[in-house]
Length: 273
Ligand code: RET
Image (cartoon, rainbow, N blue to C red; front, side):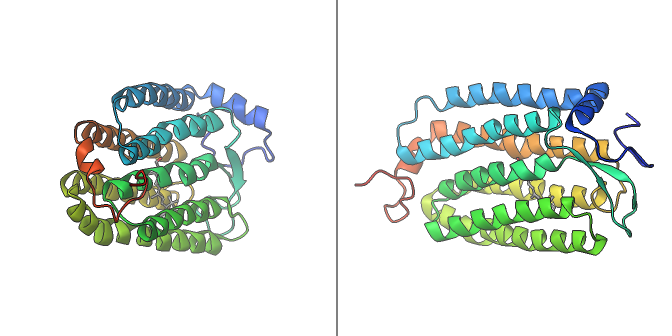
């Protein structure tokens, strides 16, 4: 464990097999990856089953988007478990761990780029939004993840790490604006405001946790160590992905007609009349 959370100097230039070996030696960390892979596999099967009777094409689109979330998760955690998407990065001067090689699970930020747009696509369709707002939320979200990845991987300058963080937060504000100001109105018009409100609240509260743990974790102020931050992300993931997806699919399976009857003008994913 000590080797995995280096607070003092560690070997430079670790190779992928060496990182893999270290992960294998840290049973708690390794188990956390494999538990997530197994969970995502089971959840995928459950979600396929839950959506088996859907007929409306828009409801099916929500279902497919939701299904992609655990599938991306399997890839994400396989990247971490194999050591492919974990690196030791030397923190720049000014950082609390300056000069140390800090374990960075950058694969997480990379794969959020693929999972979070699926969550927003499902939410936007549920709210019956238009293409402009959907595009805005999803592109801002992708930009948030990619600039968050940049923040984590910048080793040249401490100030620039936080500048990336700031850019990422700005994109996050766009996502929050769409979620809190635009989509609630759309959802009201579409007759899905109750379930939308619940899922929106879950999303906003849990998503706010990610930048907070980034700032407090080894990537940021280094108040929390790598293992705690990793667990925090894993726990947030379970709520933001699985609980979210379960509630959504459960609602869609019993209220498909509400989605099927959305006004024609909304139309994203609907069959041509
Ligand atoms: C970062 C750091 C930079 C600032 C901000 C962040 C926000 C991340 C979020 C992640 C959500 C992830 C989810 C994953 C589920 O698979 C990149 C941590 C704003 C909101 C929901």
